[in-house]
Length: 120
Image 1: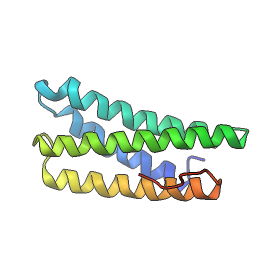
Image 2: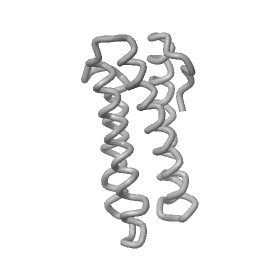
Image 3: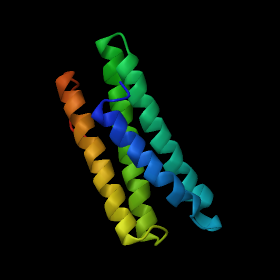
């Protein structure tokens, strides 16, 4: 499980995001930094739960939840850029990482036959 590309890319995303969110100014720390961190960790948790689920229905539920967390993370990152808390290069890099996780998640959802198998 830990060597699967989606887990590696999610780990890379979190590893890249954490130092940047810790540098957010005080005025955005609780409004943006903490939610970004929470969505990233929730995404990772949903993926782990999906991998360990015993039933197809349970796996589908966790994959959908991961998709929601990824979408919320994407919007918070975009807002960070729009508010100039995150520079454009950081936004581009985060976007590439999020897109890659989204493609892998979409592939997993499609493989498992989860309806609405579009990744964020």
